[in-house]
Image 1 (cartoon, one colour):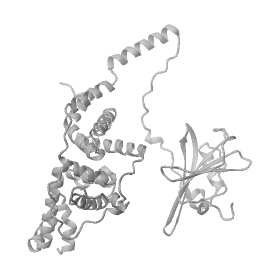
Image 2 (cartoon, chains in turn brown, orange):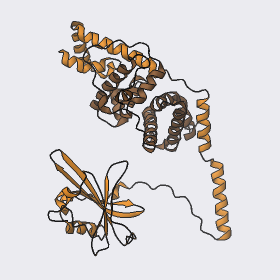
Image 3 (spheres, helix red, strand yellow):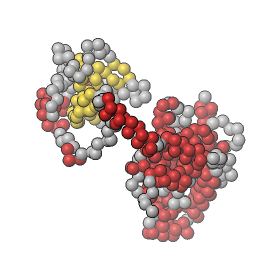
Image 4 (cartoon, helix red, strand yellow):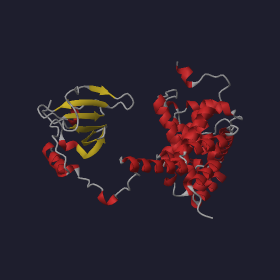
Amino acid sequence: MGRPGPMRRIDDLVEAYYVSLYRYAYRLSGAAAEAEDLTQEAFCQAQAKLHQLRDPERARGWLFAILRNAYLHKLRDRKMENQISLDVIGELPERPSEPLPDVEPEQLQKALSELPEAFRTPIILFYFEDFSYRDIADHMEVPLGTVMSRLARAKSFLRGKLLQPAGALSAREEDA
Amino acid sequence: MDCTDARQLLPFATCQERELDGTERQALSAHLDSCPECAALLDGERAADKTLAKAMQAVPIPLGLQQRLMHRLQHSRPRRWLAKLAAAAAVLAAVGLGLVYWWPVPNPNFDIDNFPEVVSAKLAASAEKVEAEFAKQGHVIVAPRHFNYDLLDSFDVTMLQDRQVPRLVFFVRTGEFAAQAQVFILSPRNFNLTAMPQETFRQPTSGHIIEVLDNDGSGYRYVVVYTGGSLDPFRQRGSI
């Protein structure tokens, strides 16, 4: 049996990663249709650049990077400015926080959508796909310390939002 | 280990314990055994992480997603047999009619052995020296006289609108202030510059300012893209 051709390899990549890539796309974009478009775009680009993937062990990180870049490209094109300022996102408190109740995924997505992408990506990757801090730093091309800081601040922000009673004003509404 | 050090390691001890080396893990564990406050912080973090992870991963996967992805990938890839048929037909047409047919050229290999020499900007601390350095590479230019060449950071040739364009990069740092100016040297041999207005505007996305400068009598134009709000920090003393 000969070495698998390129088409079989893209088959393998789709089968292995389409679920995690779609989940990532969904949490980034907040919408099922856009998530599917982003996932499709990522695999199309991967198919075109398959020769660049020399180490199959790095396939996941590579695919996630392609998807994230596609998402950032869309953001730039649409000049989306519906996120809150980075300054609003504070540091992790030094004492134990109130325990979080079970979180509805839709409630989480609403809170996530308020985070700037620079904070949203690390927290999404942290909570699934077993990305290490180093993996996240490499993915975003930022120092490890920056990842740690953004993660801590994003967690603190999410916790604050998710502990609010249902129907509470968002940060933007309060500022109005 | 004290509480300050322990709390710096807590993020690594929530669900990513493998990120701590053996020594750190042991030291942290010993501290947590004797510090109820830090232990409670870690428990709280782990509980919150568990809750958030569960919600984060609860994304419904659309039915048929994998099939749709594969279907579109298969149809976005050119069929080999169709490409061969098209190639054969093209050769026949060229031979039969005696025409030259344009054949797609594959991308060239990158030739690292012929990578152009990077010239230190310190060798070219004046407009005249910059002109001499560019002339060595076959580019005859008139460098702008307005700028302070002590601030020259680098220079090269870049592609702009399908033409090779010499570029100078100036960098200034004074205390907290830092700014950069890229000067693209447009030659009348490569561009029709007669109708090019001298104007200044701000790029909407990056916020960089673009200013078109003139060099009286030479026909050259200089397109300057800069940060810092003003070209004054980059100017030669006494220039306008």
